[in-house]
Image (cartoon, one colour):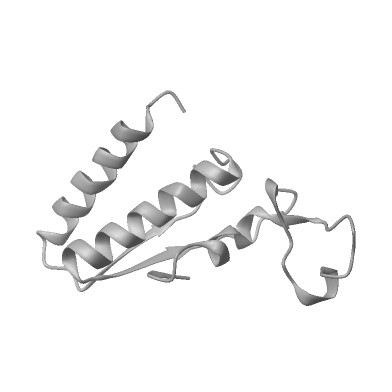
Length: 109
């Protein structure tokens, strides 16, 4: 993306503030830029964490993410953490759709 992290962070906060002002009990978002595109695994994880932590700590609201079940998207920076792969030297990459499982605990999936 072309925006800097401070701009993205501010945009997330402003949008959350706007949505919460409507009186919702919780806020949900989606993972990725669309069902078949993403901004990169580390940036997406950072965005999800910022969304969840800000929503939870600033507003005391539940934050959740909806994930897709598309195929063929894998993380470049994160390996699959499932137990069956733990003994492998070269763990397979994490499916991008499962990236939210690595997010901070305030994020519901």
